Image (cartoon, rainbow, N blue to C red):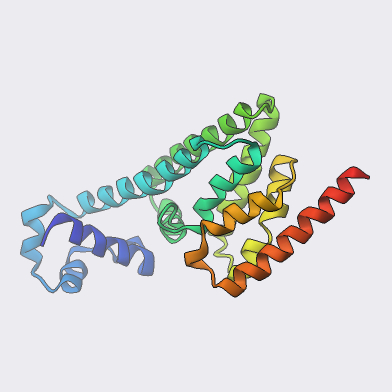
Length: 222
């Protein structure tokens, strides 16, 4: 039994039952081992909790920042790179995010880590907008709109069907950037997420997104 196994078990308890459930005896029971074996690897419970926070920062914050820095030929493509986080839990784990934010309400030190992560993520989003020609104040406002909306989704545990989520992408991008998605932009985005959507869902969503983009383009011309 190695450290990763214990931290994985702690992660599962955190997600399913909250931080108060992350204790040595339940962890040992989950892993089918003794409490004594915990102390071969960790000094105390606090070390496991610290490892969970480190995992959260390395996964969610790092992934979001990297997506903002990923190559894109336009702000629309750059925003769709960020949207990959909301559609791919291997990039950004929303359940982990919810659990850590709930934990932060009980622990001021964790709340400070969350505040620092929020600042880092917002800075990365703002810098992304600035790279595509937005003035600093507008870039900051758009970054906050993108980020705070998504954190609201997570904090409220908003549940949507998969086809509803993907069908709204074009409108969200338009609101966040002031630019229109092209059908090609949307097709590339949908193609990256075929493993998470059935072919029927993707076909229906792509048809709706293309219709919305065409409608927006006509309205924009007027």
